Image (cartoon, rainbow, N blue to C red; front, side, top):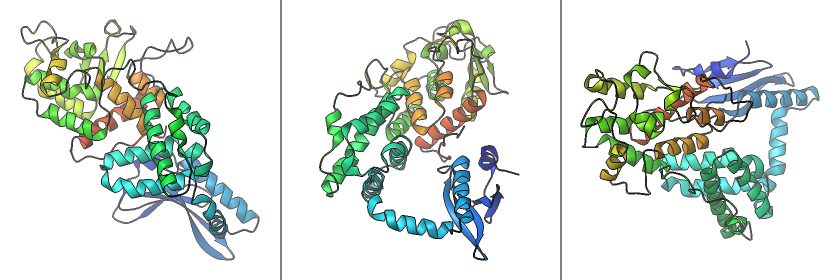
Length: 404
């Protein structure tokens, strides 16, 4: 039976390596460590041979099948695909040594050992997802400012302006390294100053660098103020709703058994009912505070009376008390944090926008279903919570984007 992305994701490592067969000799080898390697089994000259196609998910199921088909075409022409690869690589070696991707990976391997793992993984993924597909094979010395700008505009057009600025910065570092090592004569990114809109213009202050996010989460866990306020602070990054939606949360809106929070349309900016899938961590926080506030209306009631929600300044004041001044972080900043990082991690843009309950939809999409992209959003919200735990120093698996 042919493989699917779902069956691949659900494949768990065993004590010994095992294979998942697809078709045409293609199979996925699952190692005890959890690594998944594509391989092709074929016969040439009366001998059985193997050819590696790369690691999943870096090489998708679709890409592996395309590589299998290419190899089978070579076999049909009487060519050993393994030997063909060796010859091709040998011929291309001199050309690829000075490509943008080759220089970038050399730069990365030289400097990344001194970086935090979360920081380095984000940089290489940003390059792999947003830059290498378009500039990776180009000789680094031939890339023009206009070529680089075209790549950055592509990132900007999907709404990830912060990512575009970071990509420009990383590309500049690569180009300057190329200049320093004699493989380029100038840095084209230096000519693009002012070509992108300011990254923070019109946005709420937020924190997106992994190390800083981890510090913020640890500060929240160590908050010494009101327990209700601390729970609101802990829940905010896990659900990234608007501050007003969080503080007006009512117990009747939650189904902890189904792990969902259904916010009525009258509370939403766009006037439409909104469903928030709750991660295991979010449900745990709600169950923790339920004995204290569960008999009342609001999940996070005010300090003076349980008949009203907490003040709109409560979370902001708590952030200030923890040492985050004006311009550094706000309650609304948890939304920007999630939006920026999830886009950088490669999650489906529509799923992110839908989870943020952004109202900017064209006339065709105006009649959307409130459960739009729900399976993807559920996976994303749990993966996001696991990722935040990792940044906070808890022993969990890092977030990986879905291939949907």
